[in-house]
Length: 270
Image (cartoon, rainbow, N blue to C red; front, side, top):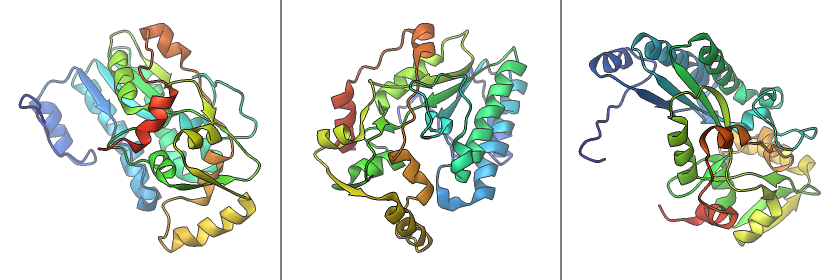
């Protein structure tokens, strides 16, 4: 890290966070440490994503922090067959209905939204980003597209939204401006079909029926042979396309990376 950047390893569930908040004054707090490891268990997810974030918001209120940005996910709207195109921030968060492991993140998002409107002296922004790709990332989307032979659902070609990691950072910087609060969708270039993305990456698509993939993933997950769960097949079968017009109108944000640059960043070296 640069010499003028101070770092501290702090568990948000422990009292060390209280001591850190007392020692220094913070103008903006950005929470990006969402627990996404599905093998960690529901209790751990709830402790990190709900209890710890609620505690962080309360400490920020007590210490007079003017802006808090909570990194959420556009995926919380849910990949569903009945989705309309370009969901805005008023759309309900329905991902927990079909994917129980996302319920804690839905609760975290809703608690942050409630705090945003309940605390007029503190601006809380909920950043609902489409999946980010780029050098140094190791999320589920990056791992899926990193395969040379990529399984897809037979008969389905959903639209995909991606954002370059540097565009995501730029969006966070835009949302640090005063006067902004509440949820904001963050998206990159226009959406593209899954098969177009795979073609850009020169990947081989392996079409398989869901009735075959689902039963295969269950035992493979239980044996520790895969990091994907059967519920995640919704992500490659149905679309979840969001509108970031509210962010663009409020900040003038425009992604710097086009579709091809964003897609090819999957293979960018760290």
